[in-house]
Length: 73
Image (tube, rainbow, N blue to C red):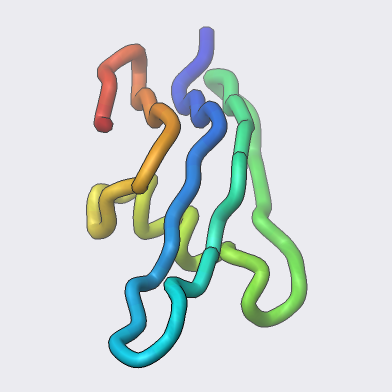
């Protein structure tokens, strides 16, 4: 059973004097019950932004996020 399902999620930080900074572009993943998952990557790869969206601290600009079948977007 899928506990977390993320499909084509996008997010951009809106900056005041320049174009938006695209942090996530088309992120797709699914995590099944009982799985352990780690997000790894270099600084600025979008790890923290992804976790903020999954925890409800930030709202995705596009795509869908489902937690235990419940649509968070």
